[in-house]
Length: 393
Length: 181
Image 1: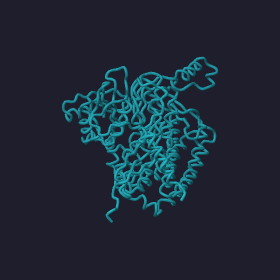
Image 2: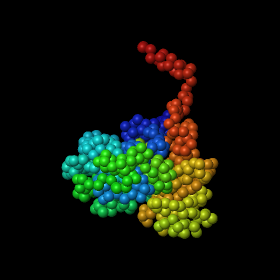
Image 3: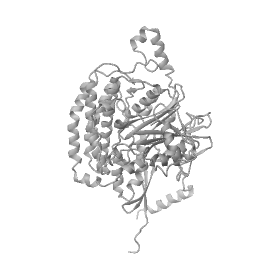
Image 4: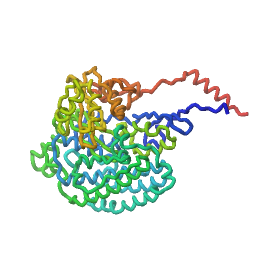
C-alpha cells in the first residue's frame, strides 16, 4: 500500500463546461472527490459595455445595458432608465409605472424559468429544461408582440416606454397568467419531493444570511438564508408599495432553500402581474409629458413647426441630463440590479456602472464550496443563478 | 438620515477624520479622507444606529482634467435601518486608497476591477490582479485618456512553454509509438 499517491489533483473546469452557465472557468484543486480550493477565472464575456456607454447618447445606452444580464434584460434597462430619470427629476404617469411593473415581473418569471430548467438539467432532471423553455417561449412571444424583439426588447425608455401597448396585449398576458400557476405545480411535482433532487441539494452549499451580507449578496441567495431584504419592499420604485405581495424566504440557506425561494417568487410574480394588468388600460399615456426627453406625437411633428424642431433635436443631438450622480437599484431576478450614473451635464453619460449580482455570487463561490464534493460545485453554481454576461459586462 | 446626521455620529468614532457632506439627488453622500476609509467602514458597520452591514458596490469615476482626478465610490446598505449611504474618496492621479477587504470581504473583486479599469492602487489588497482582462493587458481602459475604438491584436495569456524543437521531438516520439506491432 506504500505506493498510493496522495498528492492533490488540479482539474480545469470550463470555460466551455456545460454546467458553468456560459464561459466561467474554475481551477479546482481536489483531494480525491473533495475540494481543497477553487480559483474562478472570469472575463471571457467582457465587452466593455460601460466604456461603450460613455460614447453613446443617453437613450442609445438602453440596448447596451440590456445585453449585460441577457436573461433579465428588462431589469437592467429599468434600473438604467429609473436612474437617468432620477437625475432628470422626471415623474412617470401611473400607467407607465404599472406597465413597467408588469414587464419586470414577467422578466423575473422568464429568468427563473431558465434557471429552474438549467439547474434541473445539471442535477440530472433533464426534462425540466424542456418544460421550462416551453413556458418561456410564451413570454418571449409577449416581448415580440410589444417590441418586435424577443430577447432584448428595449421597450423601456428614458421618459416612459417606446410606444403604446399593441392590440391583443391584455389577452395574451392573461392567457399566460391563467396557464402558468398550473405549470409551476407541474415543475414542483417533478422536483420538490423528488428524492434524488433532495439528496443532491439539501445541506449543500449553505450560505447563511450573515455570510451573504458579508459577501455583498442580496437577493434570492440571501433570502434563502433568512434575510427578508427585497428592494421592492425596502426601497419601493414604480409604485411597488401599492401592490399586495409577499417576499418568500427560507432559513436553511442551502441549494434546496434557494430552489424553494425562487419557485415561490414565481408565484408571487404572477400575483403582482395580475394586479398590474388589471390597472393598465388598453390605451393611454405611455410616456411622461416632458418635452426635453420625449419626442412629440407623430401627427404634431407633421403639422407643427415647433414639434418638428423638437423631434429633430431629440433624434439628432439627444437630450442633456443635469450634472450629478445617482444610484438606483431594482430587484432583478438575481438580486439587486443597481445603476450608478455620473453626468457632466452633456448629452452623453460620463460614467455608467452597473452593479453585477453575478460577480458577487462567483466571488463568494470558493468559500461556499470549500471542503465539499466536486459534484456539489455544479449544484451550487446552478443554484446561485449566475449569468456571465452580467458578471463580465 | 441625511449626510450631516451621519457625519455627526461618525466624527467621534473616527478620530482625526474630516468628513464632508457631498451633494446628491438620491441619498446621503459623505466624502471621506482616503487614510480613514477602513476605520470609517468599520464604524459604519458596527454602530447599531447605522448598521451598514452590506457593501453593495465599489466603483470609481475619472474626472479628468479636474484635480484630484479620481473619485472612488462606495455604496453601503443597512438592511435593518433601511438606509443607503454613498462614500466618496478623492484620489489624485498617482494616489492610492487603503483596502476595505478586512471590513467587507466582498470588496476584494470590486477593488480588483477598479484597479484594472482605472489604475487606482488599493493598499494592503492581498490579490491585486486584473479581473476582467488578460493579465498582460496594457493600460487602464476606463480612464478618460484611454483611446476608444482602437485596433488591438489578440494577446495571449502566456507564451507557449514548449520550444519548437521540443514540439517536433514530441511528435516524433508519438509517431514511433504508434507503429503497428
